[in-house]
Image 1: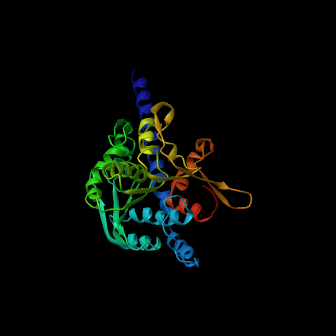
Image 2: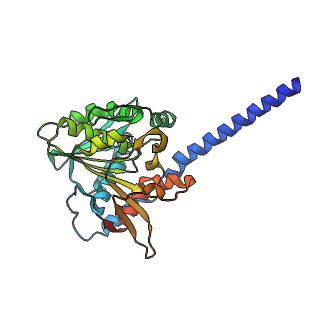
Image 3: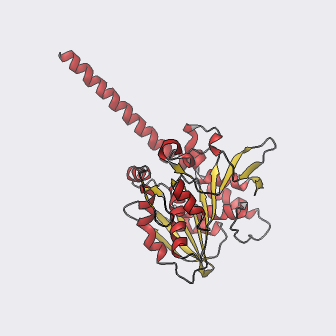
Length: 318
């Protein structure tokens, strides 16, 4: 009898050790590996800018490489908004946008940080939200995984409760800055931030239908159900949802049994062709058909990887 108890206890210990090992591996994949990607990114991004021989083009509502790259700089800057203003402004300068009245914001409950600024003049607003942060990582991941669907009145349909709570946590910072004199609102965000930007864009357009709302989201997961996606498409938002074909995060939450559907319009960043160029297939139909390596997702999901692919993109079908 005692030997049986000992065996059972040993089995329990083995299970606990395996769970602890998996937790450690997950932390390494979520935090350590993505951080290794940014060691030389400042110098490489600066080199890319210095090689430009022309003045930056105006931002475009429909996807272009130049606008995507500049707004990716802003999305990356948002990651430093809460704890490193110097680095944040460095990345904002990389974007070559004349931003004024930059305000950083942070929500204690959801760990969402971001920034809001004017693009040259007060009637043109730029907003960026962060994705999942290393600060209080376990709590933030739990928020990301809260995928129960709840109603979203601005569009109809239902959206992820975790994403909805993230938007509600910061909406006052955003809506306080926008009014009837605002002409354009630009949103640029990565990962979880892309989901929040989608909800923010819909909420803003619902309140102020005459404002032009433009979204450039990078690696956004699915946000809501089919009715939400349909309602979103009817609001008249200029939506550019940019996805690396090897990134698994935009394929989540799974639509087969949870009912999640992506919003349009998809810009799919594909694998290099034989001549070394990369195609950006506009409004591709079957992004889930691309093969991905689940162990390589931190690199493929990184905003730095997205920047590198966008910066070498030679062919865009739009």
